Length: 186
Image 1 (cartoon, rainbow, N blue to C red):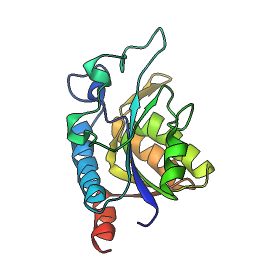
Image 2 (image 1 turned 90 degrees about the horizontal axis):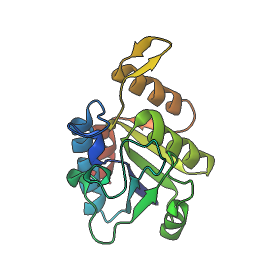
Image 3 (image 1 turned 135 degrees about the vertical axis):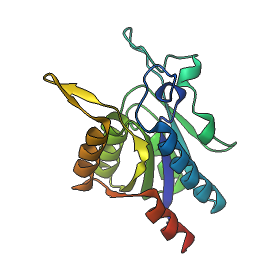
């Protein structure tokens, strides 16, 4: 995991039960994200938190100054861990994320977070286009059901479809346990 950083994307309260935009399987995904976060911290590897705030007039969640926009306590940043504020799905767009990564000498990204179908997808594709080797931990991300032309697509299918597409050329996709066994073997 030399030159690797952990990117925790939008693990924020509004996505959890009782939040303004609940996703499926957030508790399980956050628990696995925390396990990876602990492993990175134990090894002194860089950790970057991404936090989304919605600024548009029709925004209904991640509103600035609301508890829902706060990072979930399970993955709360420690002093010295950067928190990158973004306003778009792509974590690189109009942020200082790439500057942080460059300053840290990062060449590989391990990605966990919320929503597989939007911010995880947009960030992973941008990261790959920028030359980073990306690993997405499939069970440390969460999605939600979608509706298309009157057909409901279950959250599990949305999640799987987006991860399958990312795995075709943008990232290595694996379960958390596989990454943790690699990290502990070093």
